[in-house]
Figure 1 (tube, rainbow, N blue to C red):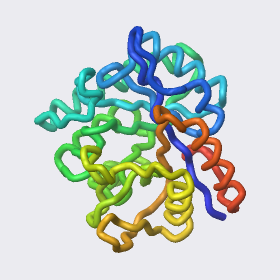
Figure 2: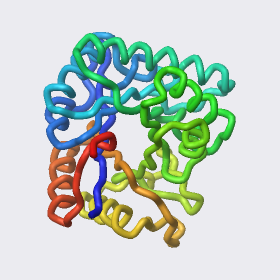
Figure 3: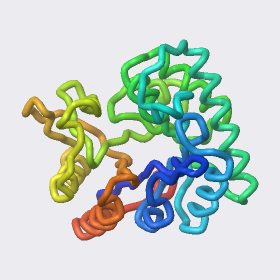
Figure 4: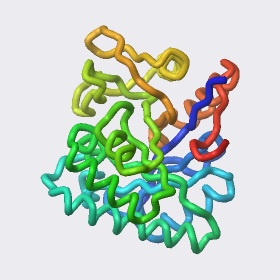
Length: 254
């Protein structure tokens, strides 16, 4: 039987600024990646989002990013592997405290934005991130782009890993995501996005922007909660997956 984890980046509001529809999206996903205060989020938002995830029986993961609130963590910073290690340990510690205080347990770690994409291609950066996760808690699952250096680094150090695919992003021939600055980076059609996900789960393939199929492994699929039609899309993709005989469960659940 086919199965998939539906994850969503949440807790990305900050201070007086509200981003996304966390409370509305949570009933339709199985794993939540909660911002840890560097690219987005703050202590109050972290606490509230953890509590909401637990209320909805959604598995909790840390979503650590680069220290770039202004750029929302999407701008590349020239950081050394040691800096990446320190950033990850710091942010995991912050979220883990809120999860423990609310009576929950953390399931996974998924780097955010530019850090995620940098780690997908950099062996040294990936190894530093994987080491940080392992030393904080070797039971945590490391999410990384399907087939990426990050997943490989996690496997080498002994972590359980999850190959991640994206519902609303297009792919390049090398398996990387199309950069957001390009006009064809996002898939805006719900029907097209659902077809892409179902094919990745069932066939292990996705059509690149160059017109050729590439192989992917789909353990978890990311849907975004900050788009105009995010709630409608979250509902539709879950319904269509279930209707297609694909079980929707958190990656850490049997």
